[in-house]
Length: 111
Length: 112
Image (cartoon, rainbow over all chains, first blue to last red; front, side, top):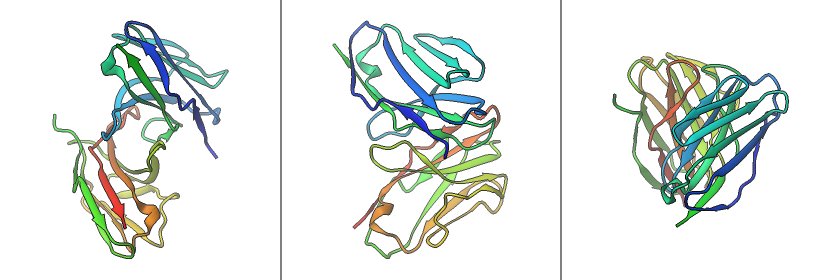
């Protein structure tokens, strides 16, 4: 049974701070890793993908992957109230295979 | 580029009734997925199509759920008969390569 674990939160951070979201996965052969943002009542929106160990930066977002530790994280710098949402970690074996999602971490950015 | 389209957006039915959802993927995306998302949970795969063939339907409750993608483009998901526990959001996603999946707005189903 492939599992993806996330702390459900809520994670509360002040505006302008760094939000750190974490995820672990059980299937060691997983190759593709994604972070989705989901606002209440909306569908998941892809914000980051990462495929190799290390860091990947895109604007205020940085994804970090450590396959040896089976650990993925997402850092959000200069957090804004508009970043308040549920962040879903998703893992797949390879391209075009189904995603296995965690339950999501609810982030609240306090103005 | 237009995104993934789904309809209807909302549906309320009585238990034991049937319901169908429609999805049109992003143009050129050969792979189409249906996921079920129950409140407070992450999406869970129901079925994956590659063009008009089924790749993975291992988690589809086949006694009541069916899906098709006859011409390799749009797809329908049907539930018959519906149970109370089928109340959820049904999400359609499509992908071209690299596994990046893009989701439609979803259909929120309430079974009374």
